[in-house]
Length: 390
Image (cartoon, rainbow, N blue to C red; front, side, top):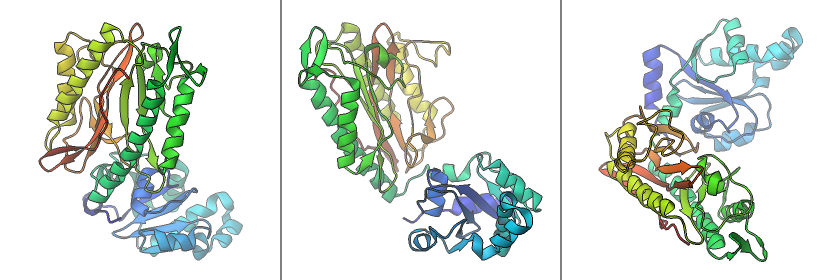
């Protein structure tokens, strides 16, 4: 996949650094994005107008030459690592190797991400190089704007997400009701059982996730409560699924709230108002509009209905208790922010819109779609109905 690093070139020119340096494994999304390489152990990526990789061992050497976007791929052994171990000890040897690697490419001043390893930075400084933190996270900022290929990766993950949501809804909708509890195949239907169905479905569609949210009743009143135990009839069940495609590493994100049985009048009202807040926020999404303005559109709906929000009361413990959304890509939470202080939206930004209401006395309601900002508005990548009672 081709990426545009002209903004990184401009950053280096503006700050006077020779190059940008990352040391991390590919679970670090900036590392994966810049290197184009997937590896479980930490490795070095240098960007000096070209991408250059350095590996401590030869294990990934041949594959990196085939699969990464690097112009050059090198190893510690290419820089006399054994000699430095003998002379300076294993702990210090890597800093000498890294110094030689940088100097071989004419680099003596590097910018590094905000969370760059301190020991590596100190080692390079001890060897006479300049290491400065990129406090704003330029690579993170660059990858917030998705290429058409990246949008298709998110779209594919979202199709898998919708299949998993349908499996969860089917399980809840098909459950029997006994004494206020849902039953499936003679046993109480639990949050854990619904999560298992979600995870199995995602695996069949090439996706995975570490955990998901299936939270019922009072559990649903905590926006990040994962949920556990039997699911009650007549109570709202928040199902929030955020899978990662195992091949592309791109995420999707979607939430629906279901109720098997008759919900309370308050839950019905909350659901309708939350759907209205979602539509108002969606209507605000277009290039040039800030994430804060989109968040304000959702808050306006809630506040006009007399419901509490954190915007109106920073100490609120019930009502709308979180931001309206966030960016999605290699990370499930990334730039841009769709919240107070949120940045200006640009074509290629992929964001969620997910208003919600929460109160332990009532439960919780949240509805979430994922959209991409386009040149003239936005495209909703979500194709899943919004229905409370199932």
